Length: 79
Image (cartoon, rainbow, N blue to C red):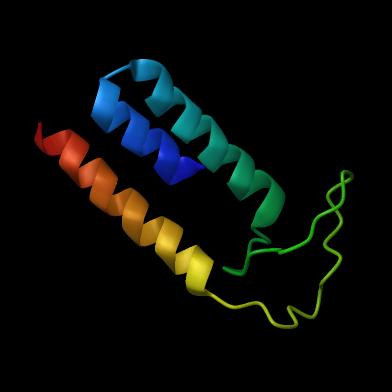
C-alpha cells in the first residue's frame, strides 16, 4: 500500500497520497516491526505476534518496500 500511495502521488500530485503513505508507514512500524529489525508476519488485533519464531519469514517484502519507497521519495524530492 505504501508504494501504491507514492505512485498515486507521483501520478496526480495530490498531497493526500503522501499523507496516506506516511500514515501507512507509521502503522506498519507500530504494528508489524518488533524492534529488533524483524517484521511480524501475523499480528492479532491486540498486537500479538503469532509467529514469534519468525518461521519462514522471508525478507523479500521488507526489502522491496524499503527499496521502492526510497526510490519514490528520491524522485519526489528531485522534482
